[in-house]
Amino acid sequence: MGFEPAEIQTFIDLGLTSIQAKVYLALAKFGALKIATLSKISDVARPDLYRTLNRLYDLGLVVKLVETPVQFKALPIDEGVKVLLQKKQNEYEKIKRESDMLLGSLKKNPSQELTAENSQFVMVPQRETVINRLRQAINSAQSTVDVVISWKRFMHGIGNIFAEAAKDASKRKVKYRFIVEKAPSDQVNESGKQFWKNYRSFQVRFITEHPETVFGIYDCKELFVIIDPKSDLTGSPALWTNNPSLISLVQGYFDVLWQAAKENPTSEPEFISGLKNEVKLKNKRSNLA
Image (tube, rainbow, N blue to C red; front, side):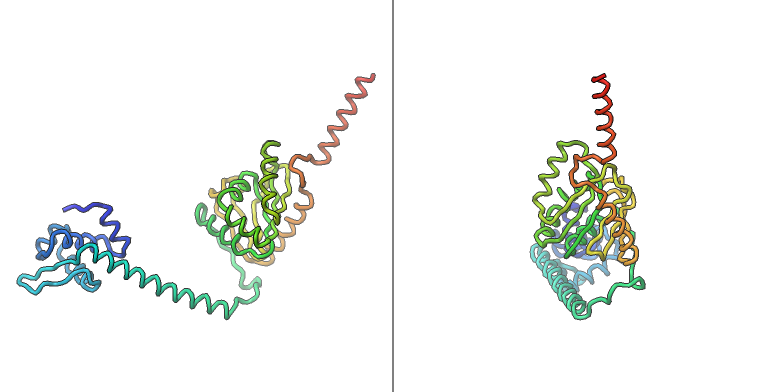
């Protein structure tokens, strides 16, 4: 006999295996059954069936009828669901107690000061793993965050994926410094300026080209470097490290870049402005001549 996939999946989500779900549903739908009949209806081989029935019996989902031959009977589905939900609740409460104890222990015994000897280098996989690790770093930041980022990543990240985390960081008065490439148009630049005015603790400066390296430094303790800076937000893995020497090196690079970057996204580098002024002066002289 076949069962609806949704029925099987529900009981799998509640903690049963696929075979256990089939056996339980067969008994719940057809009432007390002998082993031979139950094996046929559930499509479970006898060796597996005995082992499965023992487990369902231990869970309180199945009872054994003292008859010859022996028959088994299941709790009604609504009661069976309650039993499994209670088991899930008990497991959750146990895990929560253990987690609270672990966190309490860590607070009483804070980790030692970070040194090169206990630093780590971790390659974070792309997609959701990168997003989750970055969100965790944003939520944990207490004082400063320095980021070099492309315009597309900046708007997609702060304007969408990390919007709530960024707002919370702003409320905590975490000081952000973003170095971002100039937006593709003045119109986009204007919308961007209005956007980051909502984040009082955010500062933004601009460079003219797509950044060769995309990275973020969080509280001078964590560094994320995106392996492929030209990928979209979730398209590249990242290198994470808490190594103080490497963080100090990258922080120095950021500070130099920050000084060279422009506060106005529409402003031009001085040498370009100078060339344009020189051309205008030559044209003016030609017209006078």
